[in-house]
Length: 192
Image 1: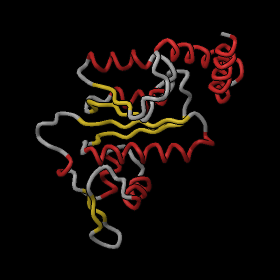
Image 2 (image 1 turned 30 degrees about the vertical axis):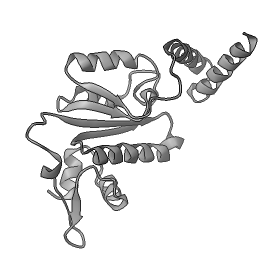
Image 3 (image 1 turned 90 degrees about the vertical axis):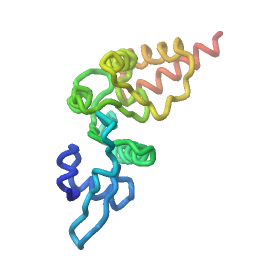
Image 4 (image 1 turned 60 degrees about the vertical axis):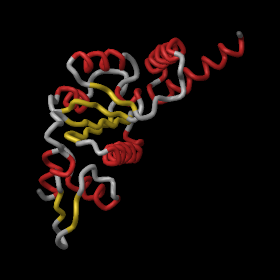
């Protein structure tokens, strides 16, 4: 199959797939066979024992972070390629993590071919209640893989940060909410 057909089948723009090929992060083996022809070897990444595949999800909050979105998608694709996973869907979008109006995340979660959802950090899937999504995936025999678990280990601290972030996002806007929540926690820790 050629690169354009592979890109259309996996929901990736053809120029993005070509850029991934040039950068060496295309999640499937491919080789150039002519000046304008790149063939993708999809059989090399799939095995008959695998019933589903990996779905990669990348998200940023605003349009000025668009470059980070491309880097995030490339890192996820590189991880999947190195781990030898079969990528069946790649979704990336610019949307708020505070609400559920993310069509590409819903599309990825609804795809029955995706048995493993991979995100770089939990907050890329959603700011709060990611555990509910993880439980829903587990109930259907699927799973969520988070590549970077983050710096907070204590669940109670993470819950407080999430609640403060939510409140500050509503008060001051989503971009500065995380910084204001962090500053509030630092002030509270200084008073204790």
